[in-house]
Image (cartoon, rainbow, N blue to C red; front, side, top):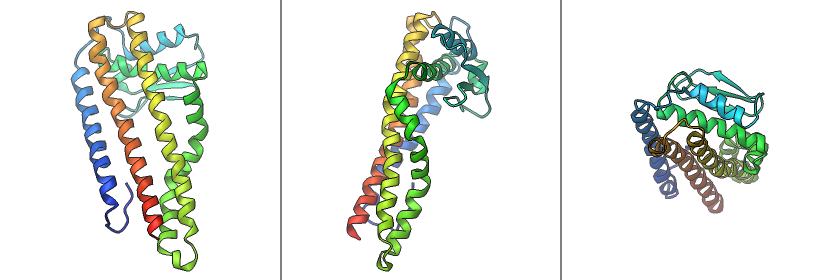
Length: 230
């Protein structure tokens, strides 16, 4: 969250920020619960990811042991899935769900899933926008009388790319989770009774993306309101 002199526009951002904190807490508690419930199949996260990739014909996509707590991700540039140690080696419902979710992203990439392609294409601008938007806006805001107010508009434009990135992330993440649950059951990694609890882990994770989008949107609205006041 960025900070400007306190004013009524802060009321837009605070609820979204509280929701983000709650969502992160929900992820941690749900993961903790189902990391202690083990799948009857006995397969580990690494085995699940590898099998799902092979089933999709993605033999060139690697599955690596990553570092860091819950640092799981798919890298479309190197075409590697990197699973955190607690997911790579575990056969818990939480681990299988996360591993299958990342495999779902690789399958999206292989299928040319349009929302994922769009997100990857705008990532450079979104990355620049998330880092540069607020400093540019602040310079324009405080030095508007010196003829630098136009920097507020540039900052808003940059930040808009970051907002679009967050919004398009939502269908990408939900689609990957839906693919994951369907594949886990179809391939026999989960029983029908285990699908529901695994889905809770993925749904909790999805809340963090909703929260991120909500925070980004409210920040953009705040910038627009402050720009209009100037």
